[in-house]
Image 1 (cartoon, rainbow, N blue to C red):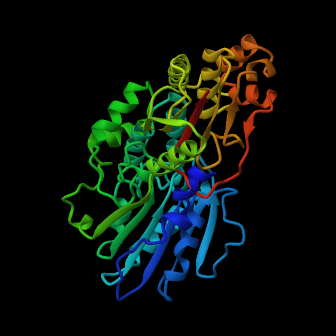
Image 2 (cartoon, helix red, strand yellow):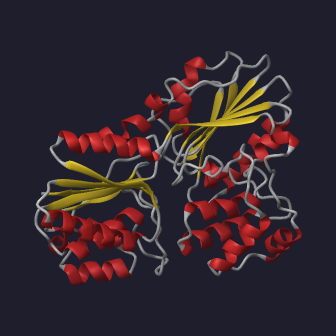
Length: 406
């Protein structure tokens, strides 16, 4: 897809630079685009470089198996023991670096779950329980990552503190609305401005019962993260190489070339997926009433509050089904919604397609609404043969939603 091109590591990292050091360069690449990011700069790494890649199961770039880089495939979105073992390997590697060395970190979406290292006094099972509760709560990614930082021995700047006095440089693909680099992968090499008090407030906001050990450590301040004035954060630098805005800008050019007037609704939209879908349907109907040939484009990361733990569906199919129900078969409006990484939630689809007859293929509006209320938007689009299946894309810059009118 044309919109993804600027966010693919081979394109986004063509001109990236990093500090050159007299000593050793250790590469740590984490996230859904981890192997693709490493592949994009492999031929520019120093001869003495080695390192570790941690990516989601099934996301390894085909044919990529360099001798100097270990590759581990771990679980996402809930951490597992493989990711925990990889995190300990990363921390041990950081501990071994000296003043003339560099920890080069490549970061993409999914890293928070893929590299779990529970802070002292916290078990992996306790951290998994909090992660599951956050995923069910509908909390936006920024709030989720604030919590994750304070439960971790590696996030929230702690990896850079462990690598000190070595230099640390992070190159990141943003999957965070607003592109806060400290939130990407929960910022393992970036000083953290959030606090233990923030974490407790987020848990209270979503009625998440924290395990007693975690709550006690938060209340005591024992889980506080390194701040910007910490001496061990003074050799840590970071930069972005791709953003959701880049994908949306490419989508604007694509629809313009098709004869549509692009209308950008925002590249960092958050909020409830169902409300967003209903709102965008109203905007599409208004555009049609005006007689314009318009393409409504948006990016960002909506949320879904789960009511059915056994439901099947992600934020893109939930958004699109709410949109379809609000449009109610209106002619001359079609579109799609998809997660740029190729996976919508925990299913095997990137997203889905919408057209005037899609509800009929689901068994009618009543059946479609019932499936949405059961958090089964995936099943609705599966019945309509309307799922968008791409496989892993090699990048992750949030979702892209496009509605074509006229």
